[in-house]
Image (tube, rainbow, N blue to C red):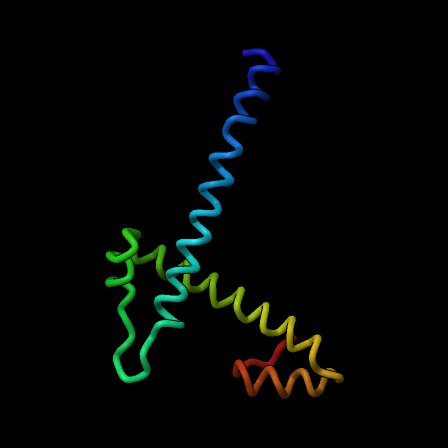
Length: 104
C-alpha cells in the first residue's frame, strides 16, 4: 500500500477514534455521577456489579473508571485549592480537611 493511501486511511479513522474517546469519557463521567454524586446517604451504595450491569461494562471496568475519576477529582480539587490558599501550610491543612490526604 502506498504511503498516501496509508495516510488517508489513518485520517479517516481519527474522527471515529475521537468520537469513541469522547463517548467513553462521557460514560465514565455518568458512572462517577451515578456512584458518587447521585448517592443517597440514607440508602446503601450501589454495588460495582450492579453498576457494571447498568452500564453494560465489566466490574473491573467499573473499578478502573471510578479509580481514574477519583484521581482526577482529587487532582482538580488540589489544583484549585493551591490557587485559593496563600501559603503551603494553609494548602496542606485545607487539603487534609477536605480530602483527608497530605498532598506532596
